[in-house]
Image 1: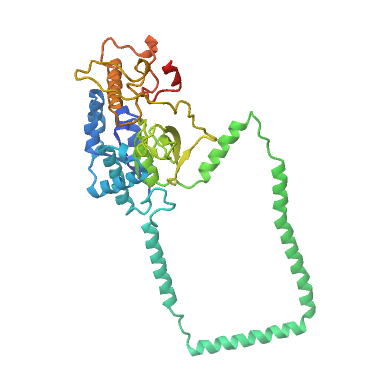
Image 2: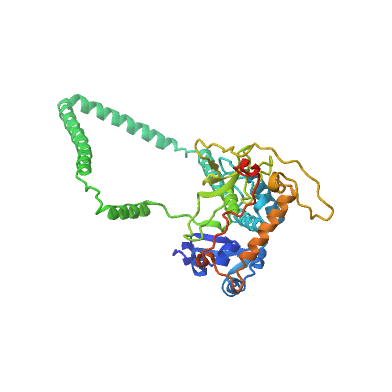
Length: 426
């Protein structure tokens, strides 16, 4: 029976996030060539507000795109798992629905969550494939049937005939041994020589193999490309046929990718359409209490409240293992941490009086914690200034590569008195 053209596709269902739809990467033709179905949630389509992108999605994608909402049970499972991985705070409702839809279709296509993980860092999957268990039960049933079947009993006449023939054969063999001893002695050496020849013949290929290994062609810079291509082609021909992935998700959000990998859900790259097995991202790690957070715009630790967050690279492998890559022999710079804070002074009813806070008022706007009103006001001013300076819809706006303007790196609010705190007192 000939295989249908649809069976050559590597993925049955691809769950799409807003990222591939907005960037149109990969193109729709590539997605249709690799997958049977394209699925997304209605919230993802409603999230696309750019006129050009929305027109492209409505024209090209919607005829082939199936919209489906996940069940509340799937949403609850994904929310609990994301909370355990630490990504729940940075995942939106739309992201949770996309992950829940991938989880729900995975359970439908594979007959349960046997190939997934229930807890982050789980060493093995939840269970065994249900198909293998059914085959095992069938094999056990067949074995029991074979054991229960009894050998057919022969009639007494046939049994007596078999015994008589055995007696005749025994007598004949004894007569041959007594009368033909010389013939027997001549036959034995022939048998031994035959066995020796066979053993020598079996050893010959090994010697030829050793000679052939020594006489092979050397790998040089001129033929290394040819050797690599030959090895790759041999590996592809010897490898088994790739299995069809039932469900795979395509997203550009790092938090979603982290949850997918740790849960053992299939994740596809938007550029190569290959399965992603290793993921490298960044997190914020507190040097004081060793707590981690996924919110990269944080300046204060959400656990201890100190300004000791550092940017650390991390990776997630195919087994869902989350690893932090720390610097070797890293030393925290304590310069400028110890200084005397100016005494607080009262203000005036009209707010016009400017005074206090040390020499030249250097400590009047001193920020030491996240819940200070000075910090909240400074963050709002910084965001307002960035919107004013980077208004892309402004007709007079020019990018910094043309004007040579360079903004402050990071755009972070200044916390503390700085490194040279004593220079402010002079």
